[in-house]
Image 1 (cartoon, rainbow, N blue to C red):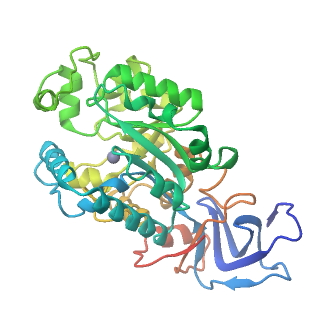
Image 2 (cartoon, rainbow, N blue to C red):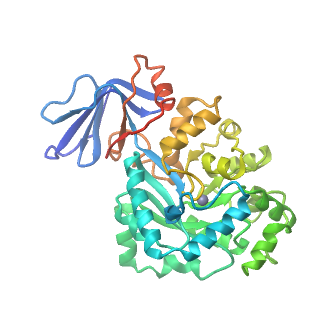
Image 3 (tube, rainbow, N blue to C red):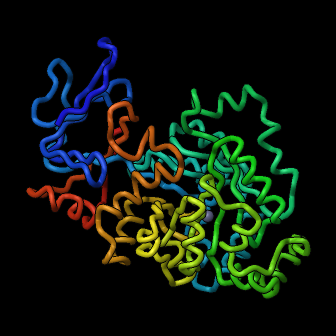
Length: 412
Ligand SMILES: [Zn+2]
């Protein structure tokens, strides 16, 4: 096999060789090489290595696409180990807000900066950062990480949703990649039960006009379900205590998914995050609307002791990807750790799908699959070398997914 892209002949190139090259979880090359030029993949093949270029032979092991963390909050990185998960979601949220109120901005920024470096060290080339305070915007765009920075809005605050318009065009140019390349900037809605339907719909429309995804936590907590389906309960009291009014929100509804569908906020630009407490009818609605899905199973398990139904999602044609949520609910932001967790928790999901959730599906969900998520000429040369070996093409993906990695080697 030789896949190749015409490139200028003067570009400086390097050839990476490994026993296995995984282009995507279903396309595997033995004794493969990837030739890169100026950070872009120029050629992929097997055995006969192009001459005249330096060769980095990684040896026994596999070069795989760099992983993607499609949902995190770097802004909350300072709270690792400071917010106990076992006392219920509301207590967790209250404690997190208390911690955030007393934290220094510099502390939050330093922890976020350190975690961006950690993400890159753990083979993550692209991420979706959801920021409430706006503290991570410049850190994210200056880091070289690919992906989307989301400004999160909640409540019925209409001022915040105009923040994008207030950026000067020069700043927008500086913050967005050239020619629409990632990283990009968009909006996130916090959740159906924390944000007015008017604001949710406004953001959905803005995202559509920009042809960008917008992100929303959906069907995560039992409080959310109770509030959306009855309009009452502890979450209603909690919102009232924080002066978030909800009397004109279009609730009660059958479920959070059905609620978003009814108000017209589900479409191909929606990234639904968590999708934990759903039934088949909800999943059908998501699939019907071509909604993108991002799961954070470790966080769900830590906070609620339950898992999202990945098997049914895959059966319905949804292509869920992986995120981690923040260090306030998980120990690490490593997608390799998330993959290991999924592998152990879902023995009936195939290794190929698990690897896809960490790579290709993540790129598709963020709309950056023409740049990253798989190895192909013209895409960014973003790979990870994993030191695992197998002699059989049928085994290599299993071997990768079933290996517990202490360390991976980013090649980007
Ligand atoms: Zn989140």
